[in-house]
Image (cartoon, rainbow, N blue to C red; front, side, top):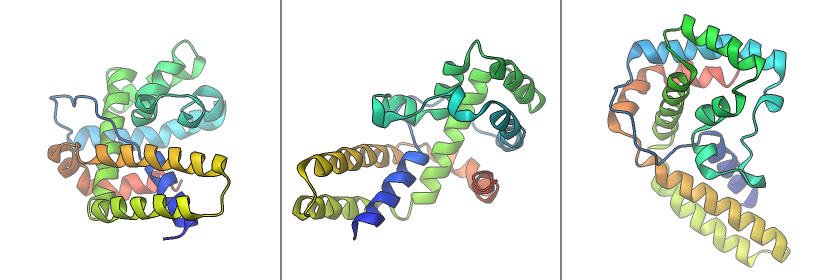
Length: 189
């Protein structure tokens, strides 16, 4: 495994983050998954209008919390309270069957954790082994100590995130499975 492949794995792990927090007893339904998908399409206009980077900061590499990165939608909503975009988002998500933004955020986080778990389920054991091999390669490389330390930190964060994939409830993974293509398409728009 070469270093660029490790970076791709790291970025993928950070994009599709997961959480160790307790799952809601409420089951994900086709209706709320479809509502999430449709709302994200509509919310993209708000993101363009305000610029998502100006609305929220989910950067864990500069001191943000792993919990925030593991629950990106809930974290973003908490950061947005009091902003004009928050009120506009509330209108959008209500049109798609959600009572409030907290409920939407929690549902969105669960959907994305299940999506990530489904996407990686066959590769998790191999990825863990590959990450260990990559750590060994980093140690043997000609990188500076600072570069090695940065890479080690990124790898450790990714390994923590991958460990969490195993905790995604089977019911969430099963509910999201029929919507995998539609959810993946959201990231390509």
